[in-house]
Every structure is written in C-alpha cells, then in structure tokens.
Amino acid sequence: MGPGEGNFTSEPRPLAEGDPDRIADYPLTGVLGSDGQGVVYLSRTPQGRPVAVKTLHARMAEDDQAQARFLRETEIAGRVAAFCTARVLDAGIAGGRPYLVSEYVQGPSLEQLVARDGPRAGGGLDRLAITTLMALQAIHRAGVVHRDFKPGNVIMGQEGPVVIDFGIARALEHSTTASGLVGTPAYMSPELLDGGAAGVASDVFAWAATIVYAASGHRAFPGSTPGAILNAIMTHEPDLTGVPGHLSPLLTSCLAKDPAARPTAADLLTALTHERPLTTPRAPVARRRVMRVLAAGVLIAAVPAAYGLFSATPGLPFGSLVRHPAKGRQKWVLSLAMSQVHGRPVIVSGGYGGAIAVTDLATGAPVGALLKGHRGPIWSVATTVVRGIPAAVSGGLDGTVRVWDLATGTPIHEPLSGHRGSVESVAVGRLDGRPVAVSGGQDHTVRRWDLTGGAPIGEPIEGHPTWVLALAVGQSGGRPVVASGGYDGRILISDLATGARVAERAGAHSGPVESMTVGRLGDRQVAISGGGDGSVRVWELTTGAAVGKPFTGHRSWALGLAAGELDDGRAVVLSGGYRDETVRVWDLAPGAPIGGPFLGHRGLIEAVTVGELDDRRVAVSAGDDGMVRVWSLGPPYPPR
Image 1 (cartoon, rainbow, N blue to C red):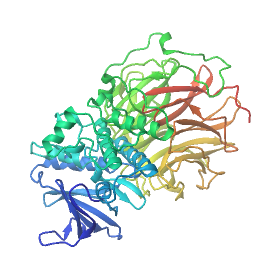
Image 2: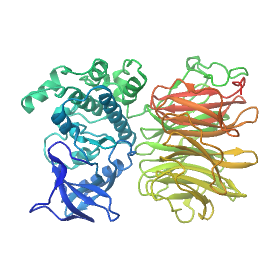
Image 3: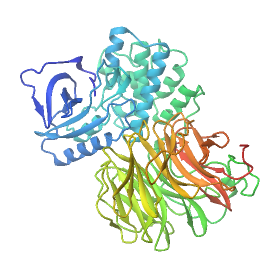
Image 4: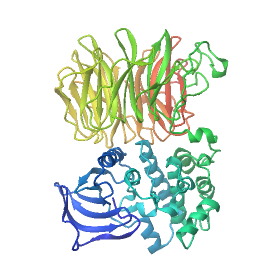
C-alpha cells in the first residue's frame, strides 16, 4: 500500500501527538498520509519487512456483523495475485477500529507524478495502461471489485506501477452509516452515481478515467465543483484532449454511460497487446448478467444440429476443432473435468458465478440443471465414482468442498468444511480401494476426505508457507501420494495415507505453481506443474527431482494443465496460457511441442482437460469468454 488520493507524502513524516504508536501487533514508525477513508502509517513486521498499516474510520465499533463483513472482504482481497498489486497481508479490528496491512511500495502516486512532472507519453504510457489493466484483471479474478480505482491508488514504484487499496471501498460500503458515496466521485461511473451496484464494468470506467488523466494531465470529466464533475459524468462526453490517437477509441468505449456497452478487461488487453481492433461489446442483457449464470438447465434429448458437430470420425486432423465452440451457461469458466453420465461423455465445468454446469461433450448441449451451492467462484473441479455413482468434487472461494451426484444433480454429502479461507484446488484418488479427495487452499494446508462417508482423513497436511494453489494425486513406489504446489513456487509430495513428507522442491517455479497433474512417463508416474513463470515442468514423484528441461512457449501463466495419451501411445501434457490465448500440447518423453499452438480463444484460458469422444482422444479448453472448445488429439499428427 502506498499513498492514496488525499494529504500524502512520498516519504513518511514522524508520528505526531495524537498518533498511536502501535496498532495490534504492528509498531508504527511514521505517517504516510490520510484521506477520507482513514490514516496510513508505516510499520515493520517482526522479520523487519516494511508494511503499510491503514486504519479506517470507526464506523463499525459496535456492529459485530459489519466487523465480520469487513474481515471477510479483506480476506478475499488478500488472495489477489501479487502481480502489479500491493498484497494484502493482514487485517483486523483493534480498539473498535478496523485496520488493513499490506506491502509498502515506496514512490509517488500517479496523481503526484503527473502533477509534478506532467502527463505520461509514448511507451511509458502504454506500459502504464497495460500494467494497471493486468492488475485490475488479477483483482477481478479474485472475486474483488476495486470500487476506488484512481490515480491516487496507483503507486509508481521502483519496479513499475502498483495498484493499492483494492477491497477497502467494498468493506466501507458494507459498514458505513452515511448516505454519501463510497469512492472518489471524479472517477466513479454513472451507474454508481445513480445508486447502482459496483461491478467490473465500473472498474473499467475508473481505469479509463485514470489513463485519461495520466495521458493528458486533466480529468476526463472536468469541473470546478463536485456537482459540476458529477453532472459531467452523467451527461457529457469525456474530454480526451491530449490523449494519443491509438488510445482514444479504447478509452471512449470504456467511458460509455451504459456499463453494458463497455469492453471487458480481456478485450482491452487483447487490443493493447495484440494490436487487434476492439470488437463490439456483448449485448446489454448478457453484460448485465456477466457475474451470474443462467438459471435453468435443459435435459438433453437429442443431438441438435444447432450445436454444430463437425465429425467424430477418423481423419479430423490433430488440433482441429471437433465442433463449433459452444457458448455455455457460464459467462466465465474457471475449471474443467470429464465424466460419463448415462453412458455419454460430459464436460463438468465450474464457473465464476458459483455454479457447476454439465455439458454433453459431443454436442455442447446442457445436461440437467446447474449444480448450485457454492457462494462465489468455483476454482477447481475433479470427477470420480462414489458408490457406483458418477460424482464431481468442487472447491471454491467460500472455503467449502462439495461432492455432487452428476446423474441427479444433487449433493452426495453436506459441504465438507475445515479450510480457513478459499479452497484453491481439489483432486481425487483412491486409498485402500475407496475414493478420496484432497483439497488445498488459502490456509496453507492440504486436507484429505473420505468420499464414501464424507469425513476428513487424519490431520491436515502442513508444510506450505503460503497458499496451496494446485494439487494432483499419483502413485510412487506402490503408494498413493499427493503433489501440492504453492504460491511461493514450492512443490511438496506427501504420502496420501499418512500425510508424511516424501519429497520437497523449493523454487520449483520462479512464480506461483498455478496447476498440477500426474502423467505417465515410461513405466512410472511423474508430477507435472504449470507456473506463473509460464513454464511447464516435470518432476519425479519419489524424489522431487526435475525430469528434463522446462517446456517453454507460453507468454503468461500456465494456468490450465492436463495429462493424457495419444492414439500412437505418446504420453502428452496439455497446457493453457492464461493471457496468451493459446493451448499447447507437449510430448512428455522428449519434452517437445507437438505441432503449433491451438488458437481461437479470445480472452483468458482458465482450464483444460482431456477425454474421449467416440474412441477418439480430444482436448477441451475454456475461459472467461464462456466458450467451451473441443479439439481433436487424433491423427493425422503434425510431423515430428
């Protein structure tokens, strides 16, 4: 956290009379500034790391529910990926006043820098636009809406721009008793000024207004009084004088009065980084429902021609689309798995809106109703068989693990609880012949569950110093093991039955371990990981030793990962790049790509999986465009 818009300085001033010398466990050493939300102090952790401690106004001193909501909102904000954002490290209530602790980023705010040195220009402006947009996208992916994006909340640190104060406006919105607006009016969207709810579209509006200020030195909607500014936002077109020509059309679309007419962050990144024209936004009705899934499911009765099945017969080349991409009932697909329902192969997908969809693999038609129960995004799904029933296991932001009967669409157990914070990953396996699940999350633990009875197995597996983001279950030396990957790039391999450590690999990736799977290499199983550094790596399950060289080619996080086999017996791994819009297939033995990347996604690729359709192997990918794509993994193959 750095200084926001208000009375701030780049360097701390000494504590004055009336300033506290400590907040909770944090001794205070200086004042970074103050604004309408509260005061920001400089402090240090017991390890000597500088942090910013923001105390918020005591509007919730006697409101237990407001305090609980504040802590929950800041917990959610704490899981935002630390890419161009100041990480939220801690939060609490001290003396009736809420406080928030985050990384301290030294440097002036964008507001201060433009006021001192003038507008940004050239490559520096483009980098600012792209970096802050990527930060905003990471915030949205964590289920957070910033609500107060502005030049004062962009700190120009030594390593580049950093976005701060995400999640704070949401916490204040729940707790305030005042009738005033939450946010900074000059950067608030028309729907917020009109009393509407904040969403990702309102953050896009604020981002564009911030970039206008950075490029021109003046506000997009100028005025000499607050009333004049608000009137300009509601009724006038933005003033883009001084904004470079290549940015003007993008910023104009972001500043549309109707939130449904604004592009998504993914649309903007595509336009900025790939130099593709910005396409017409989705229809208004669809945009208003971007954070929800459709309410009703449709039972499959036949294969509708409208779903566009190309062919499942031999001869469809490797990498070809098996059918036209299907627009599912989820606006943003976060996780994928394969199963069989009533003898037909199906795709099981977890969505941002908190529902699971079951989709016919061949046709793209829905199978049954949406499976609802999670509150918030479903980060991970896996499939297995429980008591002879095809089942799905899901984990999400609400901290629960849920088990579903895919044939009936009903829960098999009550929600499995125990994690403190978001469940980031789930995987399934077998232990002594019975189905089990493992889950990992924000509380740094891996937990094991008996899926037959719905009870926990043993104590949580500990050892990760940071969030557990990825899991896979395999076999090592005849024993089932679980491979877990953490936010700090570490991989642990543990005995599934006892939880004992088998192997550890610190620094397996230079960024977070975003995905894991298990594949077969010769006569043994290996762990495969995808990282925030964009690489895919292979590891021995017995020792944690690296196998071969990293697979490189993605220009962003390898967020989706799945292992399988081709018709000719080659062991392969499928990977999806989060921001580079490519799906890649790698031959595990030589560690080489098979053919070129699969292209067609527009936006973020969140998940991939592999399966079979009419005895042909296929790959499935999906992401924030809501489109589920099915690709042929059958011959004829590209030349080796």
